[in-house]
Length: 113
Image (cartoon, rainbow, N blue to C red; front, side, top):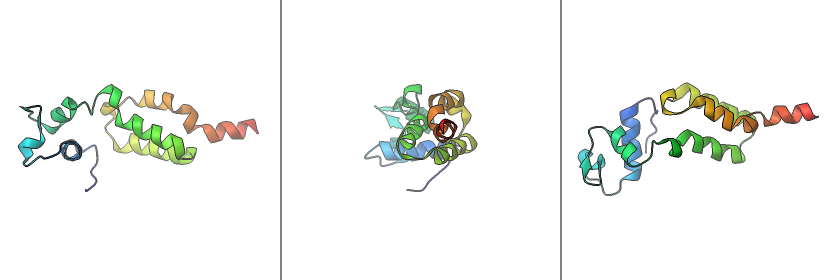
C-alpha cells in the first residue's frame, strides 16, 4: 500500500479506512460504518474511533519508538511529526510533556557524568 501524508486528509483517511474495513467493494462501502454512509472519509474514521483523543496515533507512535529508539532518533521522529502532520490533530504540548524524559534521556545521562 502506498504511503500518504496526513496533511492530505481525504487520501490519508481513505488509506486508513482501507486498512480497517474488510470486504469493501466500492468507495461508498468504504465510508459506510454500521449501515450509515458518511459524507467524508474523515467522518467514517471518527466513527470507527480511530481519531479520538484516547486513540491518538502520534502518541502510539512515540510510545512504541520510545521503547526501542535512542533519544536522538526519537527527537528526529518528534520533529517529523511536528513538521509533516496537521497540528490540529494532536496536542503537541502534551506529546512533548509526556515524552520529555525519553527525548532528553541522553542529555540527562551526560549531565550525571
